[in-house]
Every structure is written in structure tokens, then in C-alpha cells.
Image (cartoon, rainbow, N blue to C red):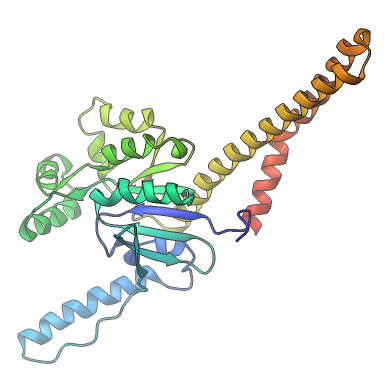
Length: 295
């Protein structure tokens, strides 16, 4: 496939294997024809109704399903792949201990992600289901009483997203790839200590924040802006390299084919032309990004 026409590639390290099916990222990657929120509400309604039916000894009703990804493996690491109507290619894993291995394998194959999303909180190794259920309930109550429930949440999950972000930045070819910490209330918790140390750690690693559970139009726009940031950096780098090569060729040619007394004038003229063209580079990149967005 032509790299210029390939689908933008998102690598997503999730905290649960079912998250991508449940929330607005489905819309952002192209499943806009699906009323995800309505489908989730319907699933919850049927589950509650089935509990009531079970208490009365009645048969349960079928529970609606959301679209699932295609199960696959990358270097023996299990992953789930999504393809949203040709808009994005998404690979997800819910295993934090597989994160760096999958990224290294993708880089080795030359499949460098355009965007990396990292869920902030992941279950502690060996944590029991009761503790996880308590953590889930605490997240739901967090908006009402964040100070009380932070301790309970962090008994169930640890903020591995900060560490995973640092691991990703250790891989040289990912230094220009946008990476975002993906969380619903973790950003609130991160700022709760009042020191800003956790927030600054993300900033120092050139990371971003991606708030989950918002309207899908926010998530789609956020992904597009992250993607445009990478494209802008890539086009700028390639443009500067091209101009450097042109100036090198012009300099060598001047020494070979121009009389010595005119070399200074030729080089001055070359620098002026290159500077003039460079002044239009931002406009060109903006036009190019708009064209890619329309496509």
C-alpha cells in the first residue's frame, strides 16, 4: 500500500479488553452509524431486566452486542484489531506488560504508529475481582467525593500510564509520535496532590491528555489534531532535508561551474530563493493537511 494513502494507525493500550467496544472511540474510528451510547444503555437495561427475570425463574433475554475487533497476534502478544470504515486502523492490547514488546515489534516491522493511546490506570497484578468491583464503583462516585475515593481506586489500579509513556519515549523512532494518556478521572486525581508533579511528568515526556467518556465529536477532533501534529512535523522535516540537499548541490555546482568572483553572488541568490520558498512552507503544510483531512 502506498504510504501516502495508508490508513492512520493507532496503537491503544487499554485497561480492559472491552473498553473500545463501549465508548466514543468507536465513533472516532469510523463507526458513526452506530448509536454507541444508545446501544450501551440498551445493554444495561436488558442486563437489569434479566436479573429481575432470573429472580422470578424466567428465561433471560438475549443481550445486544457491540462490534468486536478481530483477534490477532503480534510477536505472540494477543491483540485486537479494529477498522472503522476505512478511516483508521486500530490495534489494542489490555496487557500493560505487553506494551513495550508490541511497540518494539511494530517498530522492527516498520509499522510505526501515527498515534499511541495509553490508558492511565491498569489493574494490579493478581488483584481480586472484589477489589476491582470496588474500584469501579469508586470511579463512579469519584466526581462526588474525589478525596475519599482516591485511596480505594489506587488499591485496585496503579497509574502505569506514566511509566508506559516513559517506556515509549525510550524508543528512538517514536520521539515524534504523539502519545496521550487516556483517562476519564485520572487527570483529576493527578492534580489532587497540588504539586503538579504527575502532570509535569507527562509534559516532560512530550505527552498529552485524552479524556475518555466525552462526546465522540471531541474524541474524533482530538485524534485528528494529534495526527495533524505528527504530519506537520514529518512534512517540515522532509522539506528542510530537501532544501538542505538542494543548497548542497547548488554550492558544489557553483564551485565547479561558476567563476570564483561570482560564487558569492550565486550563493547569496541561492540562499535568498531557499528562504523565500521556506517562508511558504507553513502555508503549504496547512493546505496539505486540509487536503488530507478532506480525503
